[in-house]
Length: 411
Image (cartoon, rainbow, N blue to C red; front, side):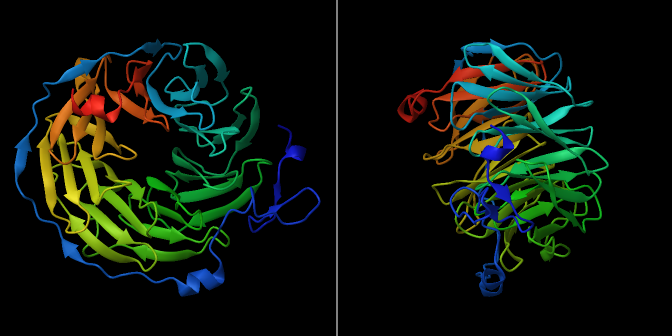
């Protein structure tokens, strides 16, 4: 689609149709207004988590092989992402400096070439029209998802890109860099919109809040910062006593409340109200770094996994530990099922690397999706939770068919 067919955007991020009039439908990015910012309040809920004991977790359960293997990358596959409007199409990003758009029948449709270093992230925009790739070469590239044509190379950061985040309501892309900065651009025309400066070390994690009104970032300086995308101002900064004591490695947002969950190299997990900067809780059940921390979308639970091989499940009301599961291998990512109390988790199991499914209520493993020859670096389920993609250090992506929840529970 040509630029002339897309909405243009003014300097504040407000959508402007080609005739210059405002549009609230597809281009209103919902950045916070001054009135909303002044009116924001939050509850000061403080508490310490308590552990209720460990539970061994032997991995002896049903094993499921892949239905398709995708083999065009020549180095590790670090990123997989489904097209949100066509579940027959997905994109991968790899250590061979390229991204690939695939059909699930196994056909590589387009190779996205042009980066000079590892493509750490490849992500579809929310409407599926664009793909953004973030690379260790310090650039973000925007591609047409329909034909793989490069639209823009977005420059600004002087070092590696750690993460990229699409705005939930419009074609705006943000990224965080090793150079301590965050950048934001209009993906349609490639225009620079904002740069956010204030971190003292690498900006390791971040993204737009679910309503799109803020950007939240965290990093090697052990601080969490809340930014106003309109003017680049830091609204809240959380750090110091009671917060993380080492690099922050993971971040997740509550889907409807102003809460952000962060995990750290120090083995702690913090839940913070980003509307007022107050800490809700700090828990620490890991003996190594927390690699991933996620809030359940439908249950009052959150979970963490880490380098110590533990998967820990907490009650998000009491902050007590529900299950502390020792899987014995380094874990790097987890994801909650969209509607059920089920957790998918992956990690470094060597030649038996896989994604496993756990019952968060019982603390039991139900199923393993295997067939990988090396560490699983990323995985993603489709919206209907019927298929899963994985990317591995063995340079391959894999497709798995997911049974319905009854089939998983009876495995």
